[in-house]
Length: 426
View 1: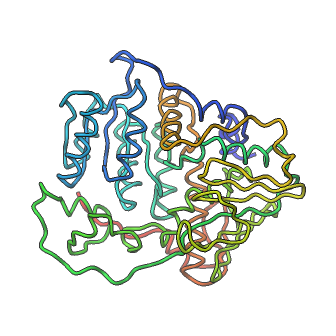
View 2: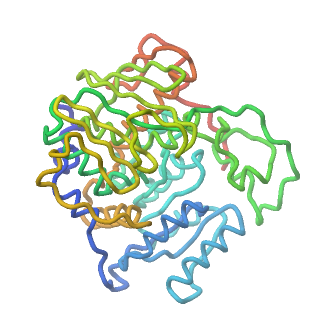
């Protein structure tokens, strides 16, 4: 048994129990003394971050004290969100996140920059003694996912990836069916992702703004230098290789492939073979289970025949005795229906509860120093599997991977693509 599997099992993460449902529904403390609050800094505050931060601010034992963003408009939007929550004007704003890391009074950071910054900012935060909640994808290369995981392990910080479906009751219930053997022997897992894309037509250069309005050098960070264009900073960076993760396959794959990893009790490993075609990627685990990654045109567009009306990020687990399908609708579809006998009733789906529960798990682990539901080991393996699937599509050939070394067997080009050059931005 590997050291990673021992750690995961000791933390109660390699198997699902009723704890998963208690975590998903755990109440926030009604109040907390100032000395007991976790002091939070925010790094990057776009629309996604405002959604996640809104869930975090519902917990009485967390206090957001500073917002860092390279854009002045977003800094002010973040400050208003926090100040409105607390009824004061005390939230600090800075354009350089390193000033957040320098503060000794900050316990943890929420990182919700673009993909290009997630791993670098997370590693710098861990080295500065901060616990980290990072939006996904947590690393835009296999190498960065490895380095981030090793940094968290070495520094002993608490790390939570923003793959919040690990803390959502209907997903946990579907995984429990697989782990309890009610599906029989697992045979095939289905994940869904966007159709991958790599945009090589760069936007035209525009005059670079004043750094106090938008610090373009800091926006780019480790990514290669490109001329400024306002559309990038407005959110149109997705699909551009320099800024994005795995040809956009990780946008959903970081969630759906991760859920399949969880169902297969593969949090300490990953598939060993990846073959892409026009409609998706087929991967094989060493234990014989097949993972099929389906390409979807849009979140609600054309779908494979197995998908029910389950909302976004649907997955399906097939075994010799039954199947289960689950997605963001909050519901679950079981065949046969008798699989649901004796299972607890699922809570009503409510907007924001997934992030609220996932951040609750993070805050509780800051206090206990336990591994969160979407910890660095979980992130490393599911993200690496997602990157491998993306590379199989990009290269157009079968790839074989050694899960122990996270390297491709007999394919020098694929191994070179495990990392990217990093610009000196400091």
